[in-house]
Image (cartoon, rainbow, N blue to C red; front, side, top):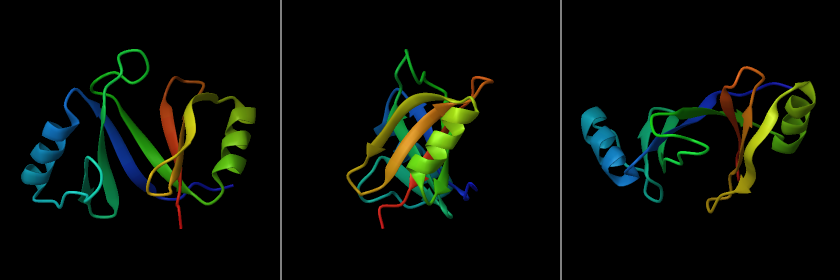
Amino acid sequence: MNLGRVCTVMAFVADPGAAVRFWSAALDAPLHPDLPAVNVGDVLLFFHAADPARNPQGGTVAYFEVARLDELRDALLSAGCVAHRGPLKLADGRRVCQLRDPFGTIWGLEESGD
């Protein structure tokens, strides 16, 4: 099973609204109409409130586009990854999850809502 392109990078910050305004202005990039996010080329730069216990400020998670989230998630769990968050269905129809690999890195999987 293959990973697709990196489609979203989630950054954990104290103030998502301030972060999205900063990056939109700094990059002269359009704001996403419904999310605290900036469209940077083909990548969505998404800002999420930091959670000291699970995703501290300053951390980021790259999300790979996948066709069959559940199947790939199960394969990665069997290979030694550990579930971190999700799977979750987002308001725009996308499904996402986060996994921690055996080396402590958190990775995201994102399935289109199309």
